[in-house]
Length: 252
Image 1 (spheres, rainbow, N blue to C red):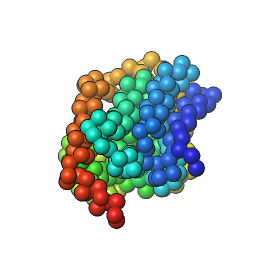
Image 2: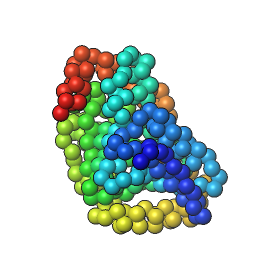
Image 3: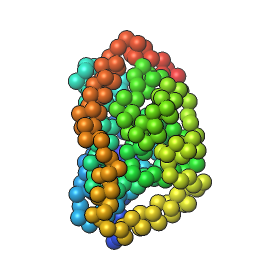
Image 4: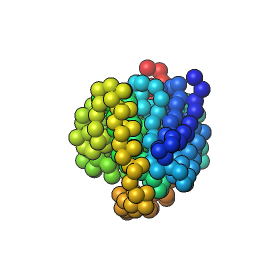
């Protein structure tokens, strides 16, 4: 199947933004930019009352950034551009005036955890384990860190960031606030997402927008912070240590 980002709005004003990539929904820079732009555009549509953010497929919500692109980085400028991809998506979610409901049907890895954390209310399946795997390849979860830490707290974020080789189960993520509710089947998950989105679509849109601003108070500096964090990873990816770690990971 072809990588894609799609947007659809139903008669109730529920706009669904969905993404797909055949490599376990790992996202190259072009798709990350398209996803960020789609979220921004949906938020500006007058007929959109609430946004549902989801991916296609069954086993993985998002496996992070494209590993092929990571290995192709040759200088700091390319590194900054690469690691700014998820910064764009997180900031698009943050600045979007509409409430974003997340639907996480499978594993979330690296940047995928950041996307889930950037939604305002997130439903997940019981298979939606989480892992911040960046240290394994010699970098760190610098870009997604602010979003993840804001949602689950500094102690849980440190656990995820440092225990980089291990998945934490969906129940762990729910207990720490990343997920609001868990469901055993995709059908149950979809029913819950739809029902909640329909409720939100009936509320005063001005109240929802004001509430969203309250939720994200204190994050106005993220426009620059996440870019600064991307630059850190952009430098680290060029180090001899990281190059060697990437080669070891690739050979597995």
